Length: 78
Image 1: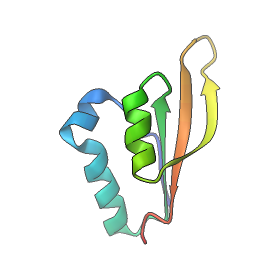
Image 2: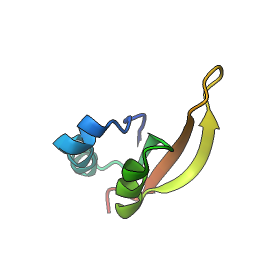
Image 3: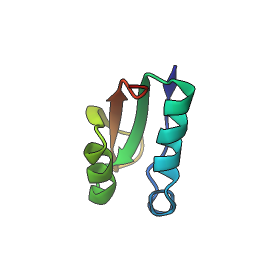
């Protein structure tokens, strides 16, 4: 099971949404959590990396100019 596409919005981060989602995934026994973070959101990238997320892909959506990073946390249920 993979939880994906939890967009890294500052309001979500500030309200603890990401921490809550991570805790809920652990309760469900999820083995891998994936998220995407806007590369320009340095605070969001640091937040994810501090919690063990590792970059596995980067891309620019067709017709856009913003760089996005895909991050993965392995063994979230551990």
